Image (tube, rainbow, N blue to C red; front, top):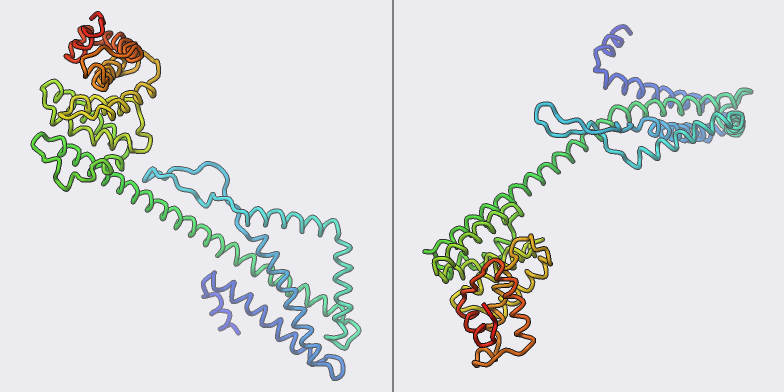
Length: 380
C-alpha cells in the first residue's frame, strides 16, 4: 500500500488530480454494481441499471454546473503595452457571450437554490423514494439513492470545474494568442503589400516622367492603375513630383513632357479619395499645354476643379483655374474660331473668368486671350 502511495505522490499535479477523480468515479460505479447484488428479488439487473442511470443523470447535472462555475472570467480594463516590444497585448481580455451566460445562469441557479432550499430538499427526497426501492432492498433504500445523487453530482461538479479552470482557460488564452498572431500576420502582410505597391508606383512614376523614357513602353501600360493602388502618402509624393515636373516642363516649352503627366494625374483622381480639386486642376493645366489638347477633357477637368474648390479665394488654384478655363472656352468657341465675336453668354463667361484670372496673371499674355479680347472688345 505504501508503494502505491509513493507512486501516487510522484505523479505530476495535473495527472494526480485526474487520477484521483478517475479512481473516485471507478469506485462509485463498482459500489453501484455491488449494490445491485442486494437489489429486490429477481430485479437485481433492473436495480443496477436504475442506479447507473441515476448516477449518470446526477453526474451530468454536476458536470453542467461545474462547467458554468469554472468558465474563466475575462480581465476587464485597458490592454497594457508589452515592455519589451511596445506592442499592446491582452491577457485574455476579450469578453464572450458564453461568459455572460455562465455568469447569469450561475447567479440564477445559486439564487433559486438558496430561496427554494426546502423545495430542492423535498425534490431530492422524492427522487430517492422513487428510485430507492428499485436499487436496494432495504429500509434505507431512499437514503442510498440520495447518496448516489449527491456523490456523483459533487464528484462531477468538482471534476468538470477543475478541468474547466485548468484547461478551458488555457485554451481560451491560447486561442487569443493565436488570433493576435494571425491578425499581426495579416497586418504585416498588408503593410508589406502596401509598401510594395508604393515602391512600385513611385519608381514607375519617376521612370515615366523621365524625359528620355518612351511612354509607349509596355511597362507603362497600366501606370494609372499602379498610381491609384498606392497609399495616400505615396500618392501625395507622386502628386508633388508630377506637379513640379509639369510646371518646369511648361516653363521650358517641353509639351511632350507636360503630356506625360496627364495619365499620372488621372491615376491620382481614380484612387480612393482622389477626387480633389488640385488633382483636377493640374490635369486641366497639363491638357491645355499638351501638344494636341483635348479641349473638352480640359474643360471637364477645370470645371470640376472649380466646383470642388468652391468660392474660397484663399485656396490654391484661385485665378489659375479661371485663367486656364478661359483659354479652353475660347478654344471651344466656334464663333471665335470663325473670326466672329462670341455669343453674349460665352463672352460674359469668359470675361468673368479673365477678371478672376488677372488677379494672379495681370498681363493675360496668352496669345489666344489677346486675340479674343481684341475681337470682343475686352480691355486687357
